[in-house]
Length: 194
Image (cartoon, rainbow, N blue to C red; front, side, top):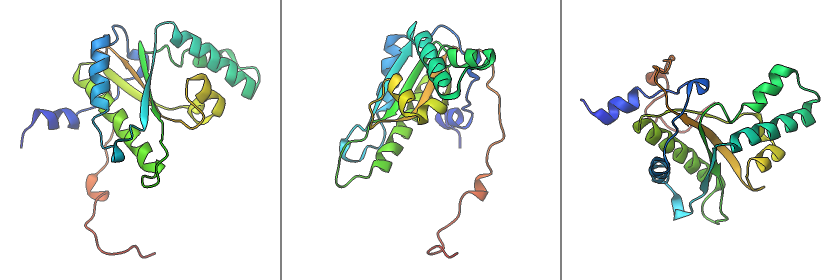
């Protein structure tokens, strides 16, 4: 069985964020990636996700705000740690925040909406890779912090699915050991018994 799509999926890797560089995707490419991102299962057609683009000088401003927030939480930061926070969003030329933005619905649970956001993130990554860009998705400490989410543009009811770092990448993404799927899959054998 040969298929260019399967070959592509079976070799997909994450690129190291510090090695992502300009040029970033064009506006037309970003639109294509976002259109692909929204072609995911979405029970009730609720569109329980949205996307935030962090590009240009905004990435540097976000870093300053994250460094200040980290210092507020932890006290004075050592220089290396401060520089790490300053560079959080400026290491890649484009970062797209995938945000779970659940809607009130009596039939559809919020966990299902969050999973739809995860699928949107994966489709976005796959589309960026198909366009020839390197990608890497992270969350980090500020995703799980109310003030961090607010300064990154999220409403109080929203949660971070992931921040997808995107840029040009020439190298071969490092391969890592992959799971043995035979250990992760079984035929149904009845209800769980402890």
